[in-house]
Image 1 (spheres, rainbow, N blue to C red):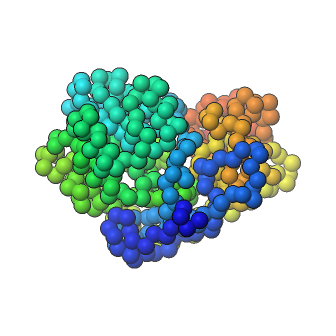
Image 2: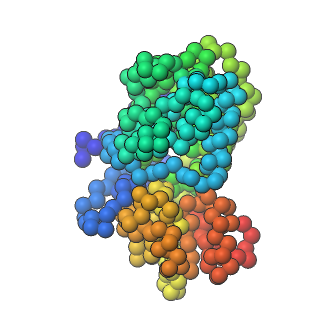
Image 3: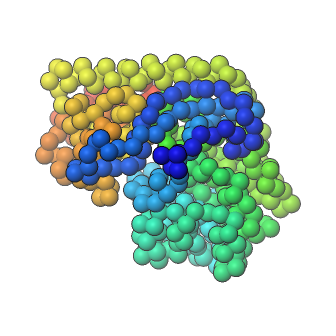
Length: 420
């Protein structure tokens, strides 16, 4: 166990050791570690899930780190093919082409590239692409689709290897994976080894301000080590000779930010959005302990509300199932103390998940076709970040008398008659 998990004493951004404890979820299974029906629940390993915030740079983080191969060696998260996500990726491609002035044959590199869906869009626009992802199963899928992908973590050595084989990159980026990485300094050293002098680097991360304001406690699980503000990222990037030049808010994964940085000598203009967001963070109390204490209090209240609502429906003879089986859905069920006694199944379109059980709760994951033969009275919307898209898609479920429970930021029941 000690070889797999270890406590964090020094902040991964600033190196200080002055922590405010925020919230603890106790010891829980890995939220993304799906089980087979033959697996014995007594064999599940539990890991501490405690959250703190650094009083120096205000990075919010898990206080323990799990060895990466235990989390990502064989990964079942596949980048969403939801229409909103595909459109978002296309918009980022267009934005980067304009920002950097990308032309045919320029090199674009993505770390945490998953199955290569985003890089494929750059490839279609004429760029050369290389992906880097530690999950060999996903790297194999990407390579099969024609997106060159290295099955490894992104390090200085990997950055140098790509530079040697393909030349410097005009664009390096990581979407929704930077928060999973403990040694962020090693990643940024790899970026420095790879990025062209006039290149651009960006990360997309869930935004701490949105997490705190909207009670997104279910996005706290072992994969998500860091919960970033723009201020913490500015401090981190500056330590590696990178200057933040632009930031965009995006409505994905409950609210994220896309932060663009460039070598300080590159001459990119710093957009007004950077100073504006830093000022807004100050006004939102990012550097005040009371902000995190209030979040902890709301988290406890909302966890209890969700648990009591679902259990009362089941006690009244209603059937409740989960819509979607995202990792945060598994985390939510565990945090709320709900299991297969209350949640009959979860319906999910990801073939890699179907036939498996959620860890801890042991809720079975069914295909939408199987779920259609057992329509519940209520769907607990575990993929709540796609609520608008799902509710529009499932209009017939609502018109037939079904109900959705949207759990975040507070539990809310949606019917055909209620406004969304």
